[in-house]
Every structure is written in structure tokens, then in C-alpha cells.
Image (cartoon, rainbow, N blue to C red; front, top):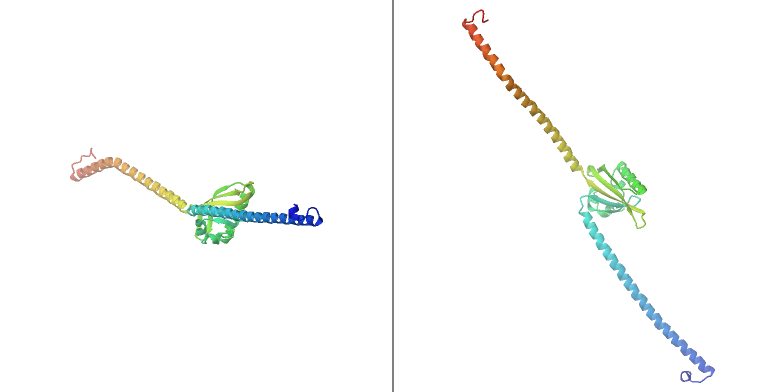
Length: 238
């Protein structure tokens, strides 16, 4: 140390030593701070990359999920607890005659008549209150006209089992109902035809059964008339 301070034990040597030590500490601190700064920046970059990868993966899964639901013939949706659509598939957007983005954030009141919209809103509130799903057949007055829908609505829970949304699947069964009604009508008409056919067969059978005695009566009457006309009939025969 005497070589560093330039003096063995004097005050000047002590001051030089302290200054040197302080410079060394400052240098170490600067190096440490630089290392820490670089480490923090590296961690920030890695964190940003991890978040970006997570978001990319999430978006990919969301796109796949959307693609699957967009090919469903049923209308599928999610609503928040205020009744606003947070997710819809293409079929629901088509029925509402809007785009998917055009339906997001809207409510049933934007697409349906007030009475129908209030009925659906009441069903959503009931599901949010009880936590139980509902399945029922309903008639909706849509822009496409009156449609019969098999509606399935259910609560959506978070990890803490709190209801955070209302989900729904609506399958249009209008054509199916019309086909069932047509089939019933055809069955009724067929039954009527069969009843008429049965009556006809009964009439034919009855005519056949009566034909022989009526023919005999006719022949007997004709023969009797001929004998009366010829004068060959005796008083006893008449």
C-alpha cells in the first residue's frame, strides 16, 4: 500500500488511499450497474418475446375456434352480463344481417322487436341468477321473418366459479317443423283415402252379395210377365 499512496503513514498517503479505494468501488459499482442494466434489458426483451409468443398462440387458437364455429349451421354467441354480444359466429351474424364485427357489442334490442328482445333478456337474467342452463323451443320475429328456434342457453363460469357470461346455441328448426306438419297432413289425407277405399270395398262386396238374389228375382219376374202376356197362366198359378 505504501507504493500506491507514495508515503508510508502520513495523512497525505491515507487520503490518496481512500481516494483510490473510492474510485475502485465506484468502478466496481459502475460495472455492476452496467451488468444489471444489461441483464434487465435482456429480461425485458425475453419477457416481451414470451408475451408476443403467447399472444400469437392465443390468436391462432382463437382463429381456429372461430373457424370451427363459423362452419356450424347453428347460431352461437357469448354475451356479457349486460346483454352485449362479445362473440358471435357467422350464422348468427347472417341471421341478424350484419357482419361479425357489426354484431359485437350490440344487444338483442338492436336486431329484434322489443317484446322478443325483452323475453330473451329475461331468460339471460334468469340463467345469471340461478346458474342453470335452459333449453326450449321459441319463435323469433327476425329480419328473415318468423322462425322457430331450438334455443340452448347456459352460464359461463370463470376459475372462481363466478358467472361471467351467458352462452347460447340456436338451431333453426323452421323447415323441420314445416316438414313435420306436411307429413302429418299427408298422413291425414292418406287415412281419409284409405277410409274411402274401405267403404268402396264394402260397397262392392255388398253389391256382389245382393246381385245373385236380385238377378233371380228379375228373371222370375220376367218369366212371369211373359206367361201372363201369352195367356198360358192358369188361375191357380196367379
